[in-house]
Amino acid sequence: MNKYEIIIYWSDEDQAFVADVPELPGCMAHGNTYESALENIKEAMDLWIKTAIDFNDPVPAPKGRRLAFA
Image 1 (tube, rainbow, N blue to C red):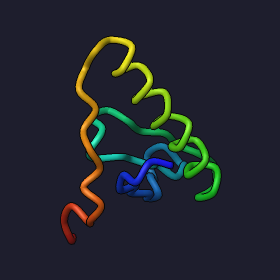
Image 2 (image 1 turned 90 degrees about the vertical axis):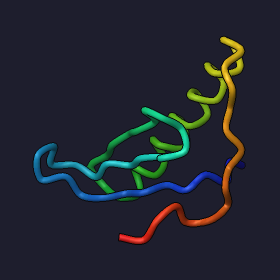
Image 3 (image 1 turned 45 degrees about the horizontal axis):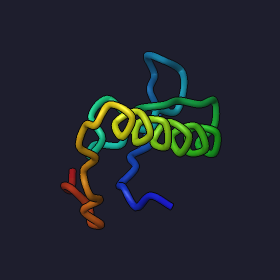
């Protein structure tokens, strides 16, 4: 299981919940519900990491803490 921070928020523009993993640049997903956005981002994270490994790109270690408070 990946231990990256996941941020999920509602987007009025997209009319969907958006999930973002700040430690994995460009790793985002969405869903009609909070739960579906969470499931979709888990799949996106796995694909992001697998693709990075396939291309010998670095995979950042999870920081295991909140990146910043808003």
